Image (cartoon, rainbow, N blue to C red; front, side):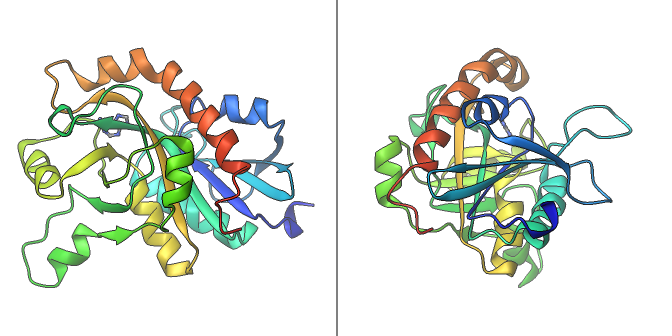
Length: 241
Ligand code: ADE
């Protein structure tokens, strides 16, 4: 079945924790590894008429942790596109928010734009390439249905943010900071597959508390909010597929 399985919607999440509730609620069945050279795992099921494939990046064989970050995001996305030919990619996961932009723990975001805040190349042409700004598929009605916010989500390889990262996040007017969305959008653009992201805020980048402490404390509640959002999204009349 795996070889011929095609997805209407590909849900992609870095961490298994972020997806277990979705797998349980939608009764998605494990189909295991789908790329011989990657620990990424897939699950599938039908939600109404839509064939859904959910992929997580899997556990790193050396470090025994979930493979978060932009590199596994891009490699997993490319492998999943090749294997499942989805009509739409939805990156689902947690993010940091910003007090200065009115953000709160638990906010849901469906960003209108993605970018990278930690790729800096001060050479004309390469500067813009490195920044990687891309628009997501316009989904205003879906955003309203989910009660989500718009704006820019900026991705980078770190959970924390250096002063240089913070300055670029400010320039981008980012409302959400993650470690995957812009990398997946980059691959989706090459494959000409529409891309959206759904992110829930676990921590506030500009709060004095260390982001990792807030992230770990709020991960469970964010996961619940994401599962509720995923159920609504998968059944929404406002999706193009
Ligand atoms: N995921 C959750 N919180 C995050 C943060 N502050 N930065 C990047 N990714 C995150």
